[in-house]
Image 1 (cartoon, rainbow, N blue to C red):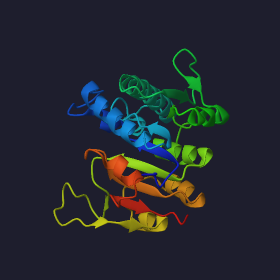
Image 2: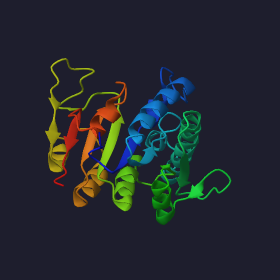
Image 3: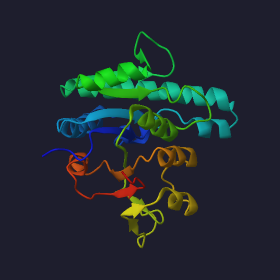
Amino acid sequence: MSPIYKRVLLKLSGDAFKGDREYGIDPKFMGYIAKEIKEGHQLGIQLGIVIGGGNIFRGLAAAANGMDRVTADYTGMLATVMNALALQDALDKADVSSRVQTSIEMREVAEPFILRRALRHFEKGRIVIFAGGTGNPYFTTDTTAALRAAEIGADAMFKATKVDGVYDKDPIIHNDAIRYETLEYLDVIKKKLRVMDTTALSLSMDNDIPIVVYSLMIKGNMKKILSGKNIGTIIGGTK
């Protein structure tokens, strides 16, 4: 079966890497994530990945507690590089070829972000993990994901979370929470739904990139979405 998307940007939160731990990286759960990515990639799609760093360091939280905001944000960017290298290792163990590109130059551990090189990796069947955020403070990794999705010409952005879509209120707290099957970008902003920040949503809207929010915790979900099954919540996109 041919995938319905040819090129996808996958956004993973740093929290997903914790597994059952309170912080850090759970190698066992990383192996699970790598297998999920492998199943989707084997359908023949070109795949870019952006990862958060919240399992190691949260820039906003540190700034709120007195740390300089710019310093905190750069520290958070370094945390995303650590996660990217961990994911690359897990993909290697799953026999999936990948490259890490970072917005902050550190040639000993990763390539610098160069769009043409990333596209060349896609053509050779490699996954590209984009780390280091945008390389600038005051931007979230959600915004980084929307930016990279636009730059690589992604057909869609997948946001893998711990819940199975976007709800009108927190489903963990409220038993009567209702899941949306589809949403428009502006609806997410007007309803103040905690999916992505407004900058990320605006970038996705301006470039007509649909956002698919789904559960990472359910095995096989990524492959099912790529195969055309309606899973999770689709935000915007008129292509």
